Length: 340
Image 1 (tube, rainbow, N blue to C red):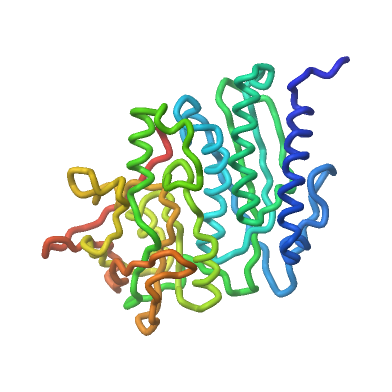
Image 2: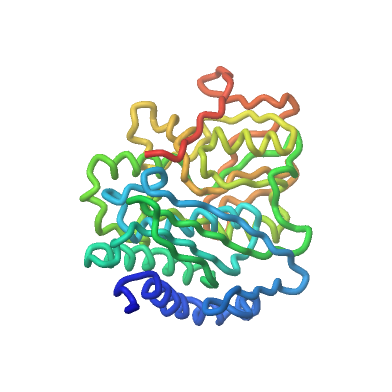
């Protein structure tokens, strides 16, 4: 039987060819190169952890209609975000990325149209560009026809950190100071703009400030926090500050007091009627790092070139509270749900 043009084998060959360039780039770092002994082309990839390190693994789904809208999100952004979400998990634990595994399910016939092939190329552009910039080799995965008309992408990421040194959610104590990197609320604000006027963003580039379309995983920050012993616990802000703070507090068995006036608000969120506070607290997908540090730590204003802001402290009460305008109120978990 003749092979169908634009079918699964063509897609696999395309990914294999393009990911090889990323592997060549990553090979300039000897530690990362040694991690992938055998990549795409065999039944399994073979990985090897660097000496004295342990392997970290994370996985994330990107589902059309839930995590992205093909009619609004540029394909390059979908690919970038697919990888960025997992890289942010590694960043939160102070890990160095090693290898990625992509499973991609496309609607039947998508690759038989010029528009469909262009979408796939754009998706790979975004994913592989971020892979190259972060030194992550694409070492394998799978392809399939989707059961319906929606695109499904699953990314599995492996990383490495010195044995027993990974940052965790559970290391904080009452009295620790609470910090966040960068600014918050920008992703939710840009998503709202995108869904109103998607045409404005068709030519958006990752080099510019697009907190939703092209988030910047804080890998170097996480590694520096771990290496310099600055953080006692950490988590990435993916579901919203309020929700992720609850996760960190629950894991560490503490409460928190957040100072509203200290929260760093992204310029896109600051134009909201409440000054962006709701988006900062509950907006989600900022992919910044929320972390605790012992009160004796002298925290620099920037870590790995990224601003760091103290936003509160951890308490014994096991309650999460917000302090604003001289009043204290409960800060409930009201983070972002992955649905459009």
